[in-house]
View 1 (cartoon, rainbow, N blue to C red):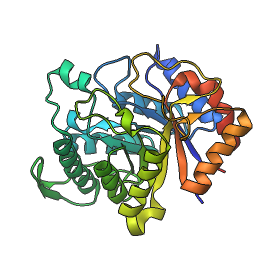
View 2: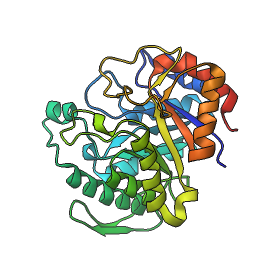
View 3: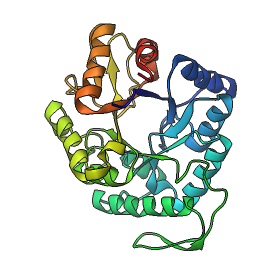
Length: 303
């Protein structure tokens, strides 16, 4: 049985000092990972600089993304940037990766939001390129979307064979890709094809349980090596989520994405999802819930 790991999404701060203070508070409270989102719109830091600063301000806390939008960067550039962060953090990087999905990002920047199938094909190739460039020696790749010729990037990541890869998703095809290739699978609601937000028809307990089964079936012999997780969108005693957030917790009360009840009831719910359904990695989605969630982390972290 895997021990619990806890992460928090942190989006911004007023100054470098306050950003470093946030990272140190997470570390001191028992959180394992600070995660930075990747969007072009909204009040959020850019992930590369933010992760590097957080890593430099801490000694144990891992840093990562939830998640890099693959459409925003060529994977050769991302491989170089992430390898550098892994070296500077002394092996504390977790690379969250996704297709890119939010229509506002694409529309505001004049980017084309391709159909989901095209974006997933591109993500599949990008993962192969990342792993290839993180490995030893020159790497060559010939795909529909990316072509790499004898590229031997340095530095290589400290973590071998590569930093932990996290994929988030709710659709069957992304979940199967994550089951085959990722170290951590973050279960989410399926996103509408037009990038306007979560598909509400995908909410509720039954679809959530089905996602776990999809991962289990697709992972086959490597299932035990995968860390399953999800984002905690709402918690009793927490604050109100930001108005711009696309997260939808309205149908998720029976899932681990919503934690209602007393401290002991929430602890019991998380233990149930870990012991009965293999979820051990829980990501706090909103900083406004940090005060309410920290006592849970202090009790369960590493257990």
